[in-house]
Length: 314
Image 1 (cartoon, rainbow, N blue to C red):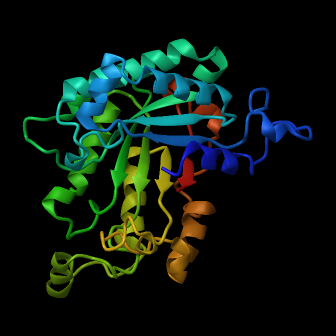
Image 2 (image 1 turned 30 degrees about the horizontal axis):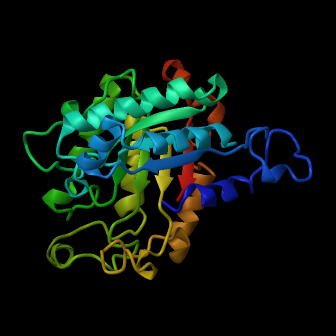
């Protein structure tokens, strides 16, 4: 991520519950809550990092995190612990060690922060919703347990595209995680998402180009990816949609990886439909977009009939 200091600066741009006094921005400790939330992707550095957490080698860093959470004025803080734990490239090859680290972090945070902060912090178990490194691995083997997980998250990049390779996942892989969440009555979020290859397919792989040239496919820049994602939101009552809105090619870290240009403003048709169907919720039979607030998406929201849909741009 970009660092919590940057996140704090962004949070300070939004309204607070009550007017702040001059100089208040310098101290978060006694600030009223902001009217926005914060999502933290907590990297654990694979199995080796999980071992360090479990053995106590990183207890000091955990205390630093607790201090930050206590001081943050975000209304809700979603912590994705060891995000995309099942991504083969991320090195969480020992599910048991991942579970131990996840549980230790949750327990340490819950037992160290104030009740007010504890009610604001939401722990997210975030799957990349694509094939794992081995058939011997499963969602069940990585699951820390209902008492440690508040929400379940997924990533959506290319799984909804017809040419997505097996390793990149298919829609069925996304649905598998969403059904897993439904069985456990957990709220769900799209924790990371962007149309892999770019909105206009300028950075798609050679395999994708072969598919496009040889088979009929949905040419509409909206329906192909955004429409498919909204279908999933409707079908599974997903309550949080986080979209990565950026020109990936302009960033050295991501140049030539294949993500491409995903800024909705880069395509007039997509920008118009984004405004009409997402921001303004122009679909009559979909009432959950922006129907709730950050006040009712905490742990207690599991028992709320309509917790509301929440949206963020990364």
